Length: 145
Ligand code: RB5
Image 1 (cartoon, rainbow, N blue to C red):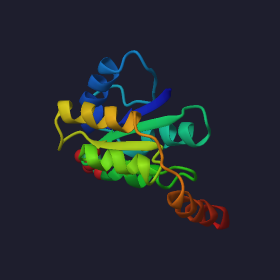
Image 2: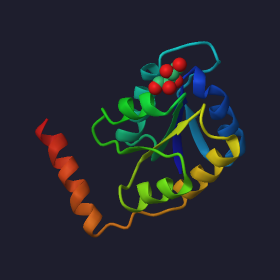
Image 3: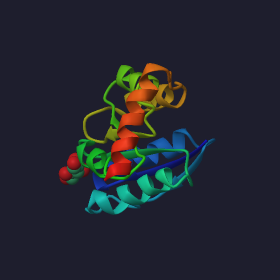
Image 4: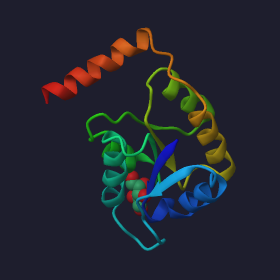
């Protein structure tokens, strides 16, 4: 699975740890490339567009709280980004929402928990059925925009 990853300065350290831990996966890094202060939309939009356009199957975005990256990613048509602070949320975001971007908080969760959340998120399938028609309503709205 090809994964897009991006962060701002507040998520940089966790981004690097994730890349190292999941090094067997194909990961495309859209920055940022240092802990120098920068603006999360500059990297978040690039990674989200790579997922929406099909270049990457899924994405992982990280900023300080995860809130800014969530807002950015969910502006991109076709993206279903989920800010997950627990493994349960990661599981539900896949089973019910077919999330294609996982957003993590670089400042509020441990490296260990982040890896556990990613592991669950990568290995949980969308359940479809009643949830699909709900996602269809979101896609229909995007088409009307
Ligand atoms: C940066 O200080 C911080 O505002 C950013 O990482 C993020 O939390 C924004 O939502």
